[in-house]
Image 1 (spheres, rainbow over the protein chains, first blue to last red):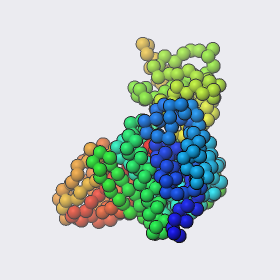
Image 2 (cartoon, chains in turn orange, yellow):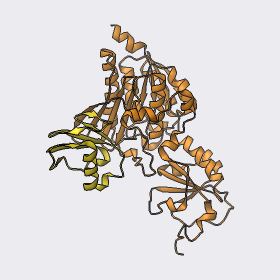
Image 3 (cartoon, each protein chain N blue to C red):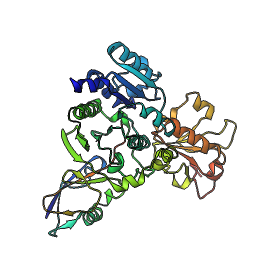
Image 4 (cartoon, one colour):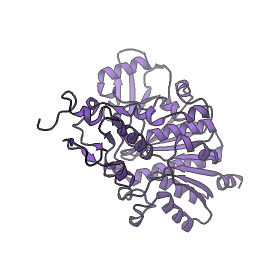
Length: 346
Length: 77
């Protein structure tokens, strides 16, 4: 009875309302959790519908948290749902996370994972984290506060420009639902036992294999994380994970079809870049919702000299935290140097 | 000695399930060097290592029958 009361009274925060957020929310509601917070600024898109079962085709274009609120209000009268229609950043993370007892990380990118893990360590909040890749999933249970959580396993963010950000529409709902359910089940188990341990569970849908690993304090992880809230507020998780924003023309792999070179110059500016992956959109057009570039994981923003593109790249990184966005040094002006860019047919 | 290998994510398929080493014993760091020499395609990947189902963050001595797991981080959600 006492344990039931703890589950019902705990304030639980879910960050990310995608493939993992949907089953986690549903399972928590079914378990009787009555105070839930949701953080996500994403809107429902058509490519979500194959696995994010809380959304319907008529929800496309609407804020996920608002769609979910209607569903929960109808379906689970006992749940008091608070929605945050914003992405978690260093500026809002502390205030939001502090108000909850238990945190579920259901995000889809490394900057958010490190940010949430660090914030939860600093605020001493138990964290349940889920992650998927192809037909495999990882669940992290972080209950022992004497640790650096995610950094105990991966002390350094994958600081590489070649991180494989998987095309998530390939991840089947059978996997995300299973991983979400395992996350919630481990929360219930924790309430039952109140044991403090950290572990990693790996599940493979293809061959139904489960592996469980104990996680211990990693001094390197502790060393790499911010020591206090002040340091946390000054951290830049995008740069830690994706590297600096600036990139040179030589570093861009123009043979890669999954890149987008976003030319943000005004329409009257010449010359055109004669490369197949170029898309011309001004900042106004982007802010008005023209985001045809979102199918690509790597975005290279160019302008005439590389100044405007730098601020737009920073803006895009904040709005689309799971995209690798760079600003091309020297801009168009440098593109025509014979050393830098081989123009088609020249 | 023989050690078993569990590889996950992008590492799956790059490594065999089992490796036989001539030495009687080997430490984890040398073992990882050996893996990288023989399977250079794993070098570019970031991964964490577990020995007998516990993530390790220091050098340990491996013995016959140990299970080594190599796990890359997953980002999707």
